[in-house]
Image 1: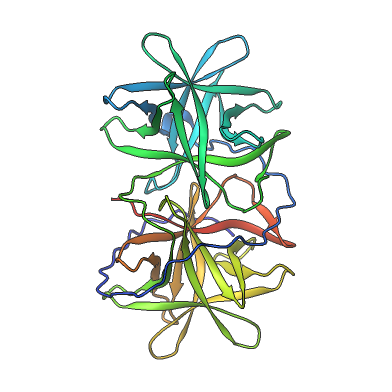
Image 2 (image 1 turned 60 degrees about the horizontal axis):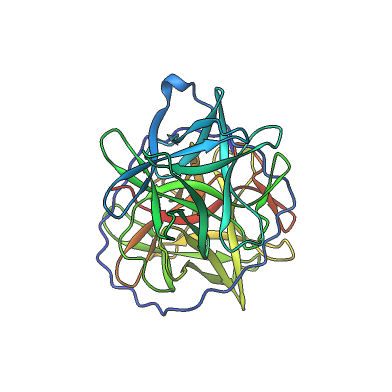
Length: 365
């Protein structure tokens, strides 16, 4: 996909009640065969919008999050805004002028270690450090579907949330994100990674496990079904899967028979990147929006901005409609492509080269 920066912000008014049943979401058959490359900050430091990273104690105290090397030297940890809307921020340790990715490492421990990883594979501990000098471990404490909750852990065992905080006082939640079901998400500079760490918009009540609808949204407020199609033209439902205990990351799946197929943006040289569901045997299914008159609208990745690939349904006249996943209560998440690295081939799923992963994420308020 040839990236271009989107400058279009779209909005829609939804006036529909959607009936959907709750379910326990099953696992998918996704296989990643390629090494995940180190993430990089591509803008010059003078152009970056940088947010602070803090743990928040129950009394409202903000505790600095830092990276530490083996000798105890302390380095800053910051959130980097690199997409136009600030929907998915990178979290980096700034070590001697280098921006190092921070990941949740793959271990058998219940509380998973959070580390920064240098080019040579050196790892840096991530700690919350109080004004008194007390160091609190920062860990991945619980996994709900594609999301890993990250907490600073006090000496009494209390969990403190970790946030990105702007100069204006705006907050984003810092979470671990998994793009596949397998424990091994990828390898960064020789270190096995369980999940990526990003900042996402805050949400309200997480709610229960549920199935959400996936729709294209017409500017006049109408909604258009999004479906998957096989080569014979047979259509299948496309749904959002919400896991109990979190609403930050909604998995977007094609329901084909008993299988829940991952939907991805594929690697392509086209300006508009193809979006497909991928079966275990590598068979791909087209993703289309179906208008009330039966017209099939292509669903494409239309522009890349930082970690975000904007996804639109495109009419024959060239009109672009945003894609949303909608709960039965009328809550909306944006459906976007997410990139966890700056490489063209993000991963390989069942033999198919993938440019970005398709997920539902909170809207920017």
